[in-house]
Length: 251
Ligand code: PEP
Image (cartoon, rainbow, N blue to C red; front, side, top):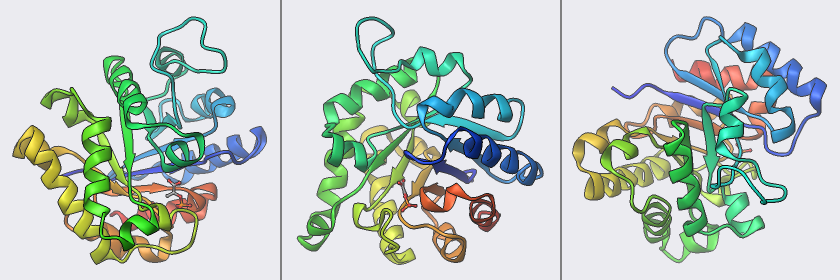
């Protein structure tokens, strides 16, 4: 039985006071949750403040990206060691906004996944197709390309630690959620990809989150699907009540 994992991706939102207040609200409201893993991923500059609020609680902290080198002349970048130093446990990698707006490819994402694993943190690897790709019948091909490209060279033991987030790009921040059946079909196919490369034991263990306009009122149906093991939440993670509504739907 895979333990549900609900993570909030705060993206480039909030200010310091709002980030700390949201973390404090979650610390209080999520204190009794023992049936799911929970994490929040604030912008880099607020990570330390949020990590201090959530230290020793059941709400983990993750970053939205990182660089793959340990230190040195990489202006503007943040290393995994730095994230670890301030108490991060997770790093979101390959988010569609990084792939499609910033221009990151599978090769760079793969280096980051390896650096995160080498440091003992957990990568949340995002994959997902764009609307025109879905309409052209390329959903499974795009997910396979991003999956194999971003996870090239991993061992089975490393793969067991990876969390996959299937995020159809057309559903992110649009209010257009995939139906539970659409999402489950892709999740089941992603699990087959894991099995094809890493074997059944690993495929059964890896958690696959759904991301894309998940809200308290659609979370239960999505999370009730056999291969949907949690959610990566954008907009609805910015308020204590809506994030808690999704966490409670995972019960
Ligand atoms: C995301 O960015 O990972 C996401 C799923 O956003 P939203 O929930 O706002 O669609």
